Length: 335
Image 1: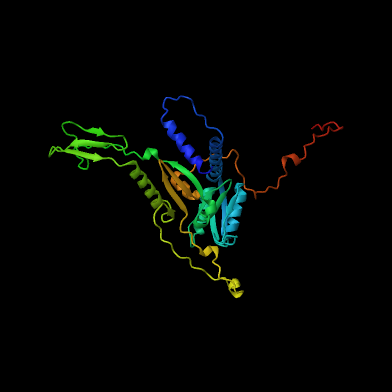
Image 2: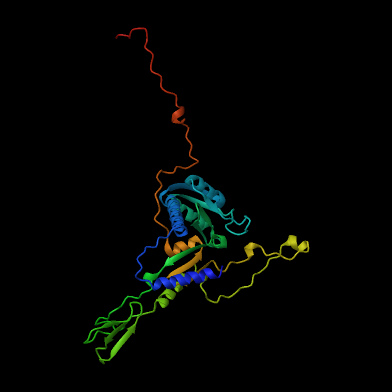
C-alpha cells in the first residue's frame, strides 16, 4: 500500500490535466489548512518577539560582567525568554559563559544584545535567532545544530523569467531594430528577440535564458552570499577527517578514545534544493532571515519596565486613606 499511494496521486494529477471543462470547485480542508494556520501563528509569534527587541529601550551598565549574567539581566528586564547556549552545557560547545562584557549605553534591546554578542566573538562568530517562543543566542555553529534547522519553501517563479531587452542606438550589446523592427518568438520564458544589424543588414537573434538557468543562478547567489561554504546544494564537497582528542578518563580505563562533540566540526549548516519553481531550504533561523527577512515587528502594547526596578513608596492599595479633620468644640480664634 505504501508504494501505490504515490502512483495514485500521479494518476489523479494526470487525469485532472485532461479535464479543463470541469467547474466543480476543489476545497482544501484538513492538514493544508492546519499547516497554513500554524505557519501564520509562528509568523505572528516571531513578529511579537522581534517587536520587543526593536521597540524596547533599555539602559545597561556592565563592567567585566560574565556574558551569562549580562544575558540573564537583559532577559529579566525585557520579560521574554532569552536562552544562551554555552560551552559548559551537555553538547559541549558554544559561547564561553565567563567571557567578560563591558557596555554602558541606552539603546534598543536588539542593539544591546548585538553589542554583547560582538564582544563574545573571540574565536567564532556569534549571533541570535528566533525560535518557538524564545530568543536563542550563541555561536553560529552552535545555533546550526541539526535540531535547530527548519525547512521552508521559497517561491521563485517571478524570478525565473528574464524580461526582454530591446536595443537603443547607442547600445552595442543587443541587436538593433532594423527596417522591419523586432519580433518576439516562442513562449515568454524561452522567447527570442529578432532584429536586423544596421551595418550589415543581416538578421540577429538573442535568446533569453531558460528558467532552469535563472533558478540555478539564484541558488548560486544564495550559497555564495549567505554563510558561504556552509551549504549542501548538490555539489561534491570534500570530506575532512575528524581530529579525535583522547579522553584521559576513558584511556586510563582501557576504553577507546572518545571524540568530544566540540572537536567534531560541522562543515554543513544548511541544504538547498530546487523543485520546479520553489526552493526547499533546510537551515537555522539566522540563515533563513538572510534570505527572506523577518515579518514586520509588532509593537508591544504596554511599555516594559525593568524587573529590578524598586520603589520605596507603598502600592496604592496599601496607602492609608486620608481621614477628614474632626471639628473642634471650641470656637475659632478671632483676631
